[in-house]
Amino acid sequence: MWTALPQGRYIKPYDSPLCMEVMSSQNKASRDGLVAEALAGALFGNPVSSNALLDYLDVQGVAVEVKSCLRWIRTAHVSTGVRRGRFALNGAQHQELLRLDGYYLFVLLDDAGFPAQAKCVPARDVKHPRLSDVTARAVGITWTTVFPTEED
Image (tube, rainbow, N blue to C red):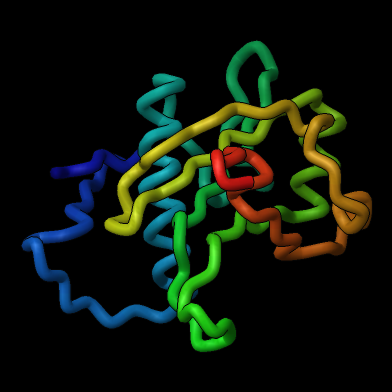
């Protein structure tokens, strides 16, 4: 499956069923973000600007920030070896979304890195004490906060 990116480039996340790719967690997060932003571009019909403070601002002034995370993250820091993925929010982006009455587009990726669920949420409905600080970076929100599961 090819995924179009806003800049007119294309990515093919996996060339074969067995992907032997070794990537840092930052590179994986960047790749996951590109997949989510490509989905957002297709949904909104306009390219997403990943280098701006906010990813998307349409002609009517609707501001959208795209956030993605994987359903499960492999880690040695828990006894099970996996933990739920987290959306990383940013205080400055959050404050700008509040100012513009904007939205988050949360994209949950499956284990292979493909979109499994997406949800648009008004920024005013996203609550975390650290988000009021414009210098706050990487405020983690688990995906089950946005997409409740039957087991929760």
